[in-house]
Image (cartoon, rainbow over all chains, first blue to last red):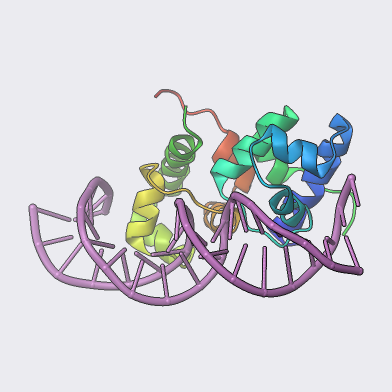
Length: 73
Length: 73
DNA sequence: TTGTGACTTATAGTCCGTC
DNA sequence: CGACGGACTATAAGTCACA
């Protein structure tokens, strides 16, 4: 499975845990809403700096966004 | 500490464990020698796709490159 | 064997929208 | 609320000559 898909699924999972909309999360980490949307859908290839920003907003480590094994897909 | 520095230090650590030179590692993951050098020094901001390539060559998960806590610096 | 500056091309990331 | 597109700018990817 593609890293980007995995990151996207994990991002969505943790975002929902926090109860954020994509836009709220985007605001929290200083990114654009359309970009967060793209990462979540696995069509973007984010850099480690971006990963760190997102992870911070979600209160998890950046590595988990990559390594966590999503249930399916 | 900067994510990029952390990734660089971890990269170096695991590279040495494998007994690779930068050039050998670069070959293993299909990247340029000088690029690997840049990542290792923390001056590059690699994407998750790059991280995955490097991690695969080092037989570790991509997340560890980010999350592993280097001893110092 | 590695660090570094400079460089070109590809794509990361923003911002405007519509559905 | 989120998927998706177009146009744009910033920066990553990728390579080189040389220290």
